[in-house]
Image (cartoon, rainbow, N blue to C red; front, side, top):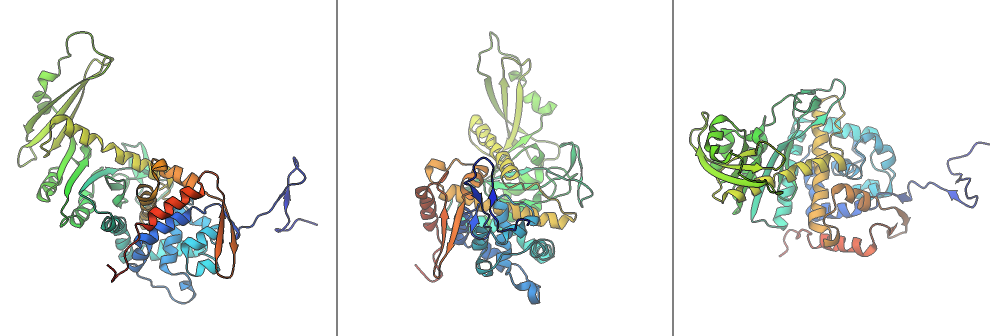
Length: 446
């Protein structure tokens, strides 16, 4: 007789071993419970679901929008970037408990239910508009509990390779392949303030206003210092004017030209003598007005001589900061952290997996990936103990999310018997305690 699904599997090297599979009793993603805890502390997915419009009727409504949203976000946090994984995840005990509601006692949503949620419900114009705002509104919710004294915005574009005839896909000469060209804004903590998926062949700064302006409005009435950084793609007088009008300090890279070079001509002669092992770095500051500018602005130049190079490395930064030259350059150079955060999103959450045909479907997918990213980043920067607060999101997924557990159900409790391998009980306890201290004060208290 053939084997049944309940028969134990055997291995040849040890005839005393039996392998049994208990999908509804065992999970490999028990660490998701910590992420769900910080979500609950700030009411993030609950807040988003409240702002979505539900036009479903009949049996299609057996899972609430909040439950469907959690399943979309948490599956991405655990490394399941496609709705095709929903069939197995629907019976996974960790996923069922982070999703909550009906899923705890029965199952989470199926592949078809998740597909309809992401491609039919969330793509409705009103819902898509609300979804695009959520990363920033989640950041606002965190800031209400953890106040800030300054905000530093880093704007940067990235690539999401495409395959086949996807809507909005186009060849991008800079990247050298067909892709989408999303635009991101991060704050100094690595949180995504806003993201927008764009066609593949647009310039790096296209649609900057629709992305940056809502963020500026959110911080408009806050008593904080405001800063902005961007590479040469954002060296745009319209951006300067908006930032100046809104009392933002900025440092934006400028492409070199003959006029800029003429201002630092005295620094372009190689220093006399044997070059030292360390680079020779010189700075210069001057006023400059490009033809498209209505006024002159401060430009800081950095000239760097290396022993193995015939010509110096030269960079220009336009700024309204009054700091000394070297401090302006140091401040601008920290913009590179935004590139690292984009890499984290690519490798830890695989947010370049935008494989749908319709552009709006992929816009939704990117927003969901970024919401998952923000929950992970909130947990990292607000709840991880000092001993592990340098973990990347990828390390967090591999060590914290991927905790194996056996699930035992009783009349009053459900117990996750968690493996204590990479994350100990004391470490997990400390994470939960840190999250508990973040929990929102109930309305009417205090």
